Amino acid sequence: APRPAAPAPQSYERPAAPAPAPAPAPAPAPQQPGPGSGSPAGPPPASYAAPEAPKPVAPEDDIPEADDPDLVDSALSGHELIVRELGATVVEEFNNE
Image (cartoon, rainbow, N blue to C red; front, side, top):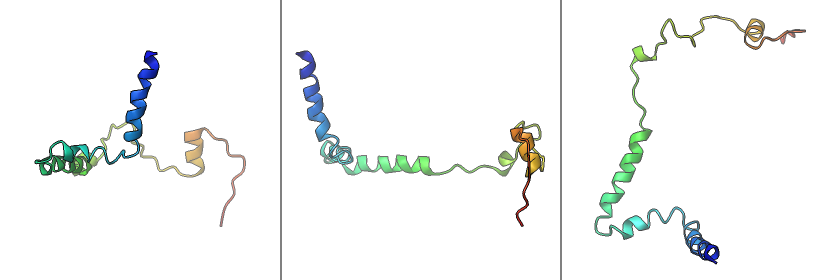
């Protein structure tokens, strides 16, 4: 008997929340701080704008170090690159001209 009682309140709350899912967040904010609704509305947009702004990177920080293991200075392409990276065996090569 306790289990049916617990799902009933949850099911009552769920239909109200999913239908106006975007509306509940804005609606409670103006209703609760009615007189100061301008103040609460101001901080969320400011907090959202801050993470979106990219941080500037200094040019010297963008240059890879000489001992960087991920840095590969080989100019391989095509057949040589496939053999080295994938261990492939090329049976026949076609030229598209």
